[in-house]
Image (cartoon, rainbow, N blue to C red):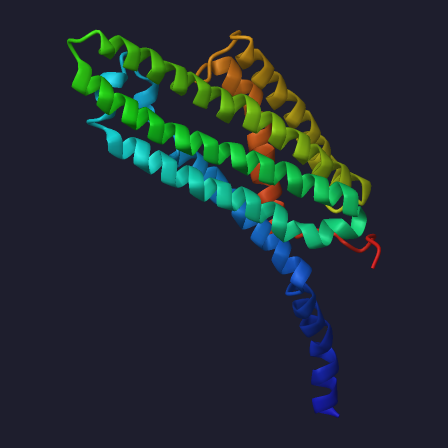
Length: 246
């Protein structure tokens, strides 16, 4: 009888433990971890030399910054794509169309991220050409081309990527809010953050704000912080899938 009593007493704990280790629970925790990986990689992908005045003459000497930035941006791409793909089996139960749309936006965004990586490589080539052409009329041509590529990369990273990611995230947030997979305040915060980030991108495109300026960072901060909070929620609590169709 004592043995039976022990078994019945431990049963709920064991069941709870199994519930915490379901495939959906593991998928949510993995997705949360990938958000953190993407956030850290994004910080490490910053290339400080490109934000300095007269940076072109220093690019070749500090090429390690460009190579490191490119590598971490590739890591960020993998994490962004992985986040969408890991959550897709859960989200498609709520809406196959919106889930596919979310994954599609994420993959398109990753494609533009990779374009930005290629542009870093082009910048390095142009900087080397500039160094070799110093003192000749060709140096000015290299400088103009390099500045065009640098500005283009900023627009890709901070306008195109942010806008596409924001539109995709809206699909995700609609699903999370509609099926109450996370608290409503967290989804609503995300919607507001997306609106703020896209506003920042429009202002950047119009040259009203700068990438490294306080107004741009203030407008993009809400979405970044919400992403970290969502990551923590996914890791600790997971998604509430009880209301989803089986």
